[in-house]
Every structure is written in structure tokens, then in C-alpha cells.
Image (cartoon, rainbow, N blue to C red; front, side, top):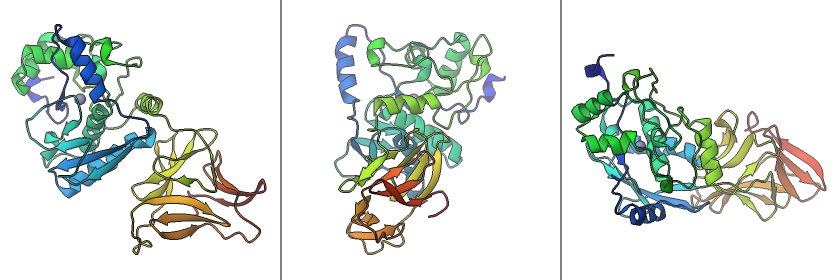
Amino acid sequence: MNKENLSKTEFPVCTTLEKTLNTSTTSKGNAVFKNNNSWITGQTIRIRFVGGSVELQNKIKEYASEWTSAANLNFVYVGTNDESDAAIFFETGSNYTFGRSINFGQLSNPNATDEIIRGITLHEFGHLLGLHHENQSPAANIQWNKPVVYDYYQRVIGWSKEQVDSQIFNALPTSYYNTYTPYDSSSVMTYSFPASFTTNGFSIPFISSLSITDRMFIAKAFPFPVKSKLYAGDRITANNRLTSPNGNYTLYIRSGKLVLYSNVEFRDHGHISPNIKFSNATSSNIYLEIRENVLLLFKGNVSKTVGPNIPVGNIQYINLNDSGNIEAIINGVVVFTINMKTDL
Ligand SMILES: [Zn+2]
């Protein structure tokens, strides 16, 4: 490959930099570092945008939610000047230190495709959740062709040799990790690079989706309580979810919709979008709840019946079965079934 033709778009450089290690302060730095990046399972993370078009912001929100389909965390987007836990900037050419800020300067390029936006969004939000570059995992064993890599990042990106070392080559100290997986070359957290960067022809294309390991890792780091039944008095929300006993389906609220998500195919299998019919709602808070003999989807104080009214008695609980269907149960008997893939 002609080095001059390497595309910055095809092999984008991450704007989140690891600290340049200084052995004399490593110990102190790591403690601060870890403390700055620990979210609590179930936490709602308040994020504010500083810049970016509404269209681009909406794409970022949509793609970032792939992380919260797997992790028991919730992203909410607050006003630019509101109190927040994390901030998103769009500064061309700027880099940020690993922490609670993301910079999407690369996405200011009007030629950025949805695939690029998706991949960079998932990658940078991965940093926000505390994930580091996969190529710097202690488990990575990439046979770098170092002169070629130094030349590229120094000449094209403008990094110093030390920056290439700290951002690309050096394995991160194990004190940076609570845990790590075997090296996963399909992780969205790896740098992409051409075969000319290695001595054995190994290369990684631009990655725009979470790998199975990415999803499993973050699900383990921020686990959902596993339950398939919702009883009267409880409610389904963004974070309080039902998962089928075989683990294949999850039912929860995302972006104002009741969503049935396939954990096998990593995509939605059906949803109820109440936005149109809830025009009089006083609140955007959406949840699914059993009220006596009906199942109701609420938006604020306005509700819509999901499934039939049951004349024979109060619904005891609903169950998400292994086929992804919602079963309503009275006295141990299924009184109706909702197939979100076709019924709604
Ligand atoms: Zn990165």
C-alpha cells in the first residue's frame, strides 16, 4: 500500500488520549484516573452537547444507545449549560485526555458517513464508560512495523515519537484495568490500521459496531438484574427490564418506546412508539405497568392500554417468554399473549 494514500477517514485517529506515562507519578495518577471513570451500575449519566448540529446529535444519541442496550446505564441529554456528568465537544484537531469529555471533531467533516459516525460514536462512548484501546490491552500481541507506524503518525497526524508510543504501542499498565478480556480484534475499541503497519500482514478495518465481546464485557461490568416477570406495583423503565429466561430477549424503554430487543441478533424485534398518541402528556417519563385487569403504557399521567382488557380478574404478573412474547398471567394461567414482533 502506498503510505501517502492512507485515508484519515478509513483509519481515523482517536481524539481521546491516554496519559503519557510518567513513572514517578504513575501511582498517584492512576488512583485519580480510576476514580474519575467509575460509573455506578444503573446510573443515569447526564450528558451535554457543546456544539454539533441537531441532526448529528440525534445520530450520536441513537448510536450511543447501543451501549445501554447491553449495559445497565442510562444516557440522558441535558442542555448545554445544565449540570452534567459528561460533555461532548466538536473541536476539529483537538484532543482530550481520557475522562469524562468526548471530542467528535472528526465528525464535523460533512463527508462523514453514517457508518463512520456510528463507529466513532461507539468508540468514544466506550472510553466514556471506562474502556481503553484494545490494541493497548496487556493481552494484545500485535507485530507492529514500528518505523512505518512512527512515520505515519508523525508525518500525517503530527504526533511525537513519545505520543505514538503512549497512544499506539505501549501496553497499558495493568493498574489501569479492573479486568480485561483476551485480545479482541473485532472490538470497536481497537484502532484500525492497514497491513503495512505490521510485520506479519495483520490489519484491522474500520469497525462500526460492537463486537460480541464488547457487549458481553460491558454487560458484565454494568449488569442488569435478571428477571422475566413483572408484578403489579413494579414497572418497566429504561433500567428496570425483563429478560426472557433463555436470555434471548429483553423488554425495556428506550428513546420513548417500549422495545423488544434481541440479544442474539443485536437488534430491535418490535416496539410501541407512543409519541403520537400521547400528545397531551405532561411528562416524558414512560413506563409499562399492570393496573388491575389491564396492562398500561404510561407517558407521564397519560396511559394507553396494551393488549386486551381481562374481565375475569386482575393480572397477577406478566412474563417475557423464551420466544419474546409478553404473557399476562392470572392464577397461574396465561390469559393473553402479546407478540411485539407482529401485534403492535
Ligand atoms: Zn479511542
